[in-house]
Length: 223
Image (cartoon, rainbow, N blue to C red; front, side, top):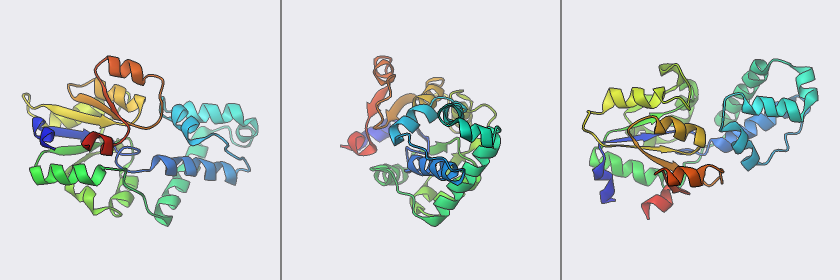
């Protein structure tokens, strides 16, 4: 893993990249819908391809697919709060798996004393629950959570905040995302962009043609 020494700052998204929380988000939406008497029959990949593009995409799609859900509750803010509670319940009920290869790369960065930072859309309360489940996250010294920036991804504000806080002007920066929305935020910075995902997003060939590197997992990256 000598290549890690080519960079002076590593930036990581969190959900779906370092931890397998995307499936828990999916289960939380299923639970929220079930509590409302609705069966969410989107596949996990269909869910990802909707949820990872813009903030209101999933709400709009659920209202379109299940009009009786909107008839019950026209405020997506209320339904999203129910989903958020379901997410917290699921996290407290069980383990959250690390994504393959994550522990290896984080240990290598710690041993090499290379600065690293998480830049996430998730709130601190969710992050704190997951961090308590995996000691490896204590090796990451800086966390930029949703409370620390104004504009959500795909705006690059969150990553620019991290770079301006940590990196010197001459430092080489590398960043990792797992969704097109997050990747677009990363592309608004000087970081070398890497997308790590198994979902076949239609934009990936265009991203690769534009200089983005794509791996299906950290394990693939580290081989």
